[in-house]
Length: 417
Ligand code: EPU
Image (cartoon, rainbow, N blue to C red; front, side):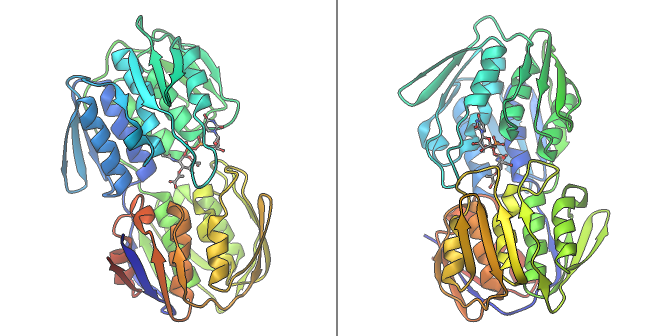
């Protein structure tokens, strides 16, 4: 298993480029199952979750050709409408094939995701929505069997709580359903909007994506299309925090500034100098950072996927920051590892109290999930001495060549086997 060895204390300078969004690319790949024609996607990040999704599409019967950051998918036939446990257990987003398979083949068999490091993460809302579209759902042997032999029909679906992949799954099911579907209390994340744009290019009729009510008028058939995925706001945010935490002067290029308002506001309040251009953001950190409370929320609120990284930053700020996690019930695993490096953090239910500034020192730490690993990398970049981060396969799930990108900006980071 690979590890990162990081020697901290070097301010980051220069430029770091942002890759395409993992969480936008995953549903876009799944959407290619909705047509027998070829879908070409650009800006697909070369990360492990994407490779897993590509494997799943091949198992289902699609041909997938990757060249650079472009991927061509042709699902001429659906041979096996199934997402097996072996793949779902490594990537929960495999459940994104449920909607498209049901719409295209009238049948889907998808393993239920098990427990997860950050919370329970059930897919009950996906299933309830699909039932409202006329699917019959059965669960046995750890699998969901969904069938719609006579096709799906449009319906009004109100989500009990906001779910990102739930909205994506339902949108993909509804595009080929008979009649109109209205999704209420839908997720407004930019990844949902990006998927809607791809589906519209494929011939779907969708209005309102990006708002909490999405209207979909089912069509007979979808066609091939070409689409460029949006840039990864979470990767971009992670690098902006890297610039700030190291006291550097760093420009993040290809930065989706319009999707990062909540983070940029917090950084400014904390005393970081932030300059933005249409596709780039530059951070310059002052000698002292201020502690600023933060609560995670659905978009356009502060992303839960940046909470761990923000906590690393707050260990360097003057005062006490209260960080509240409202999306997932168990997303503070990084706090204990940060504490091993010298951070002063107390967990109280869904709140973490971070008192700073703390002098972090390098230590051996273990990555527990994707974003937790990113926060440990950030802490290591500002710690004195050497940090060894174990289980970096978690970070490889969602960050493309992170060690190369950081090294180019002056970080001392090495991958060792
Ligand atoms: N929820 C339910 N039932 C459902 C679905 C969700 O109770 O059927 C709950 C979840 O347990 C959670 C909340 O609703 O407490 C929100 O979960 P959501 O469904 O929005 O999460 P997701 O769609 O599974 C996506 C991202 C996550 C990101 C969340 C929240 C993808 C592939 N994943 O997950 O990304 O944290 O939205 O923004 O888009 C990551 O990239 O590291 C990551 C975990």
